[in-house]
Length: 149
Image (tube, rainbow, N blue to C red; front, side, top):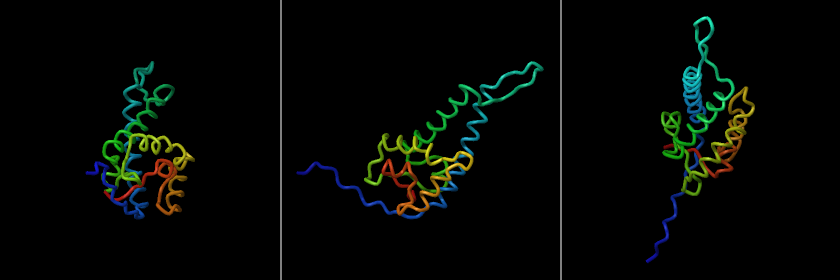
């Protein structure tokens, strides 16, 4: 008897770029809410009795860590961020096995995909629009795809 795992079913690659963009917008809204919460929690009382919120210094770095954690935790657990879940798409591994290493790779490479930061995900969107499997840089490096859930 052969105990080797059965090969994964082939992944159907479909152009979900438009859906990914909407999912990304939803995720940006989630990250804006994170920013508001973090800046408020760590805000400071002013001398005149007012209150100021800020993402300066170590609070900014905490926010960055939370942003990366958002993508890593949700995509590692379910293959979906909130935006992907709402839009009915998910991250899968091209070989059928989505590992924490693959999710970490695609998460960390958001820095490149998001360049220039003035127009978030401009590079990632252009790369995904022009690649045959509609992958951004992080997907290519991690060997992942975004497909309909």
